[in-house]
Image (cartoon, rainbow, N blue to C red; front, side, top):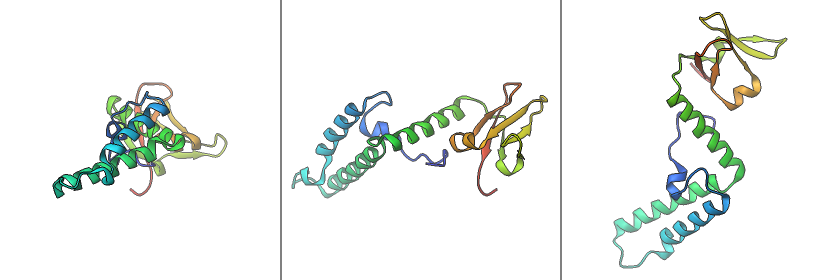
Amino acid sequence: MASTKGMEKDWYSVLGARPSDSPAQLKQKYQKLALLYHPDKQRGEVAAEQLTEGTQRFIEISQAWNILGNEETKNAYDLQRREIEMTRSIPVDTQIHIEEMLWDDDEESFSLPCRCGGRYILDETDLEQTSLVNCNSCSLIIEILQGER
């Protein structure tokens, strides 16, 4: 779940659920759909194409439940969704590779000067949780890119 750019599916919509649904509601929606699309529940007279579509749908439902049915993976997925929503709704001034930021041993953080005179400051725990950083004195936001340039 490290990459926020590659979210392939909206797992909530696969289950017909909302992020605010309780774990019991998510489980109920999963079970209902799993029974409906389970390959063993498909009728023999169903066309091969429909059977294939049903099987694909069952696989998607199972993948959604694997993510949303586990508290840890659900929380990571929810964080990823929020970050993507923020990126879409908040204009990002620029993208910066983490290697372009300066490491401060005393503060144990990365920093980068902003054009307003303020600084973008990012400590290691923030680096693991988000890729967006606000300037400490204006409203500009940068996106931190990790990995290869």
